[in-house]
Image 1 (spheres, rainbow, N blue to C red):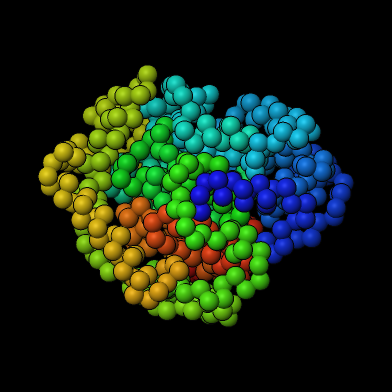
Image 2: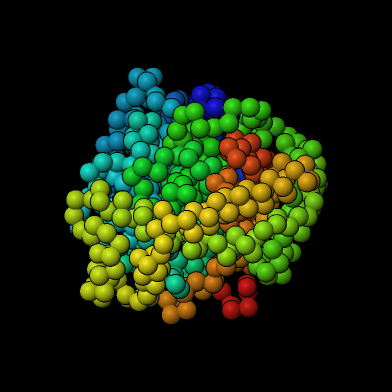
Length: 537
C-alpha cells in the first residue's frame, strides 16, 4: 500500500460518522452523553461518555467532528489520569506544558473544518529517546538530562504537522537496554522503575516499557516506541496492547537515539490495531511502502470473515513455558474456527542469528551513538565519555552497576572491518531467508508466535528473564512485525506476534486487525500489588 493510499484510508476512517463495528472490547455509547464531573474523570476512564480504554481514533474524530467532544477535554482527561494513575506504574517522565495549548489549536481547526488528518487533536506520548526541541530527551540517562536537542526528530515533525497533541515523554529502559549485561527492563536513572499495570511487582519488558505501560493504563491514546530487537513487540505483549515494528526505513530514524542503523526503527503502539495503523500513516516516510496487492485495513478490521482463507504458520516456542504453549494452542483453534489455515513451522537459522547478532550490534552501537552524541550541544560527546560519566555518577548505578555492553562496544571492530561486514551480510541473508523460505514453503500470509512469556518479577539484583527469540528474525531482517493481545496466563497478558515479508506492513496490519477482532483478548489492568509465585512462569 502506498503512503497516499494509507492516507486516503485514514481519511475515510476518520470522517465516517458511524462508530466502527466490532472493535475489540467496544461498548455501546449514547449518542450525546452528559459530561462526567472533573473529580470523577480524574480516575475514571470515562470522558463525556467515551471510555478511554476502548475508544478508537476514528470514534474520537467522529465525536470531535460533531462537536460532542473536544481535544481539550480529551487531553485534560489524559493529563488527569497521568496525575492520579501514573504514580502506581511510573511510566510518564514529563508532560508537555503546551499540551492543552496544542489541543485548543486543534479544536479551532475542527470548528473551521481544516482538520489536518486522523491524528489531529489526538494525545500522543513519545518514548524518551525521540528528540523533542522543547522537552528533554535523555534515553533515561542522567548524562543527557541537562540539555534539550536543537531540533525535533523527523517523526515528531510529522506528528506536529498532522495536528497531534504531544502529551509528553514516557520512561524507558536506560539506553534502550544496551548498557549492562543484565539490565532490568523499565528502569532508568532519570525515571526509576516502570511497573506492569496488571501486576505491579512484575516487569513491563523491553526498552519501550513506559510507552506500553502508559497505554495499558489509558494515559494516552497512542504512544511511540522504538525497537532494535523486541523492544516494541515484547512490551506490547507483556502489557496487553498492540505494538507495530515497521519495516526498516519506513519511519525515519533521524533524531532518535540509536543502537544500530541496521535494525533500529520507531513504531506506533496503541490499544487497538486501527489506531496503530492510523499513526503509522502519519509517521511513515513517502515512497517506502510496497505498492502492489495490499488490502485496505478496513477489510481486515470491519468485514466479517476477515481470516477466512488466510494461511498462518505457528512457531510455538515451547521454551516460553507450558502455559504460553497452551495459550498458543487455544489461539490456533480460534483462528481455525474463523476460517484460517494454521500450520506449525520452525523458521531455520535461528541459532546462527543468535550467535552473530550481538557482536554486530556492538560495532554498530559504537559508530551510531558517537554520531548521535555529536549532535548534542552539552554532555558527553562520545561513547568513551558516557562510560566515564557512569563511573563518576553513583545515581547511574542504583539498580544495576554494570556497563559491560558499553565497554565491549568501545573495543568492538569498527564497521569498516571486513569481519564486521561479513557478520552483517550473513545476518541480513539468513534472517530474510528464515522468514521468506518459511512463508514460501507453506504459502503463508504470516508467521505467528508468542510475543512474550508472562511478566517476570522485577528484580534489580537478578536483572531480566527475557530470552525471547520470536522477535529476532523480523528485527534482524528489517521486516515488519506486530504484537496483538492473545490472552492471559493468570493475571498476566501474552501477545501474539505476527511477522511477514519486506514492506508488507499494510497486509500485516490488516491481518492483525482481523486476528484482534477474533481473539478479543484485551481487558483492563487491575493494578494488583502482586500475585502468588506459582500463578505464572
